[in-house]
Length: 119
Image (cartoon, rainbow, N blue to C red; front, side, top):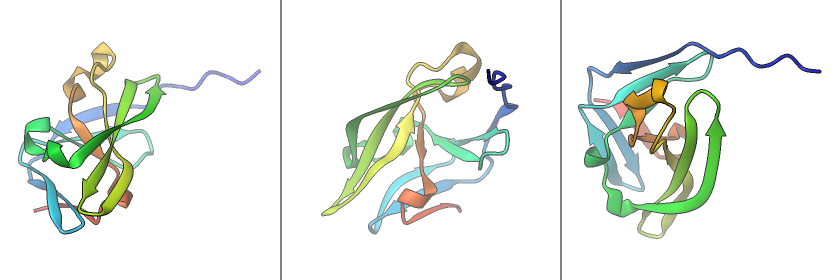
């Protein structure tokens, strides 16, 4: 029987720079209020308040995943013109209590957008 996974160290920090997300020539998100989440050996993930995202470019999908350390995530695709990035964005609407700082924020897969950078 496999040993249970040990909880990774998770830290959520306010980002001091502005984060910008570009897809198919459009600025999908620009935020001076983003947070960066560090989780064990995983790459840092940037979480953006919905008010700093062009929500009209997001399409909800049926995809859901569960993380034992954060809770259930819901996914969105990004549609700009005729280009679609499937399941490129996720959000923990109601994460576990320890992760309340990321509740409702949106996180983008860097590899599914054209550019995710700090400005």
